[in-house]
Image (cartoon, rainbow, N blue to C red; front, side, top):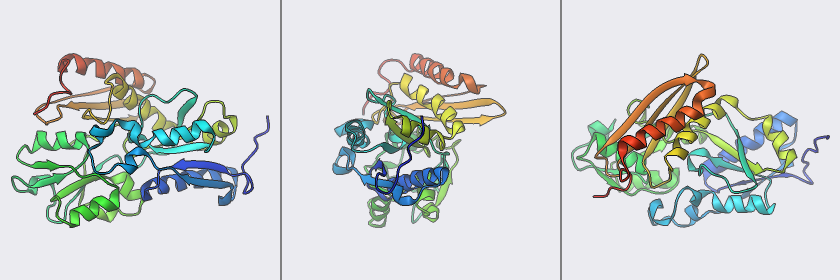
Length: 315
């Protein structure tokens, strides 16, 4: 069957959230597709869809739901045919997609590291006892408290620009952002320092962009296959298998990173009590083909070690 390419009169509709970072990711997707098929930019239409996570900004994410807060409305638009593909930050994505949707295209992964951002300190270790650390991430919160229990963690939601404004207003002495997002916004200068994964293991799939489509949309499938990065897919297969087996959500402090080298995949995984009182970690290497199986097995071992109440302990 001949591939019918989009045109300015009948564009491919790309759904995305409306933050500057989300739009940058949608533009990158559009530009890669346009280059792959020699299409003009106006053969694509970028449609902004406001999600629950975007609308409700005055409460912690754990109080209003899980990862689907940033994807549900976009996926509904995809299922209804209002958009043709959806562009997501993969660290926001639930491990299961709705029936009739598939997520099997990933762009080349960006820098996976967290960025430490502070107007007064070069690193967490430089902060005085009782200093406020701003983050909405349970993972980052728990990791900070494991290493520096004398610091105070305060809620710090919002996009990159909002968080930087809160920092300027003195709501906290420091915060964290993803280096990938700063790079995509050409704002790497914002980072006081990039944190090595040996110090702060990143979120599952951090730095990766995923593109979702309808299962029966053959045109989208063929076009997206041209921009899929296989190595990112292999890495995320291991990380998301680890997450899925842990039943991970925004309420579970989980970190993980898969890396490829010489036909092998190294997976580092970590789970933490929400108050930072305990951390369990693992580090194993297998052949790339066994990456997803390793993720599931690593999760199984950790759950056995953690016991049933590990994630739900509260102060």
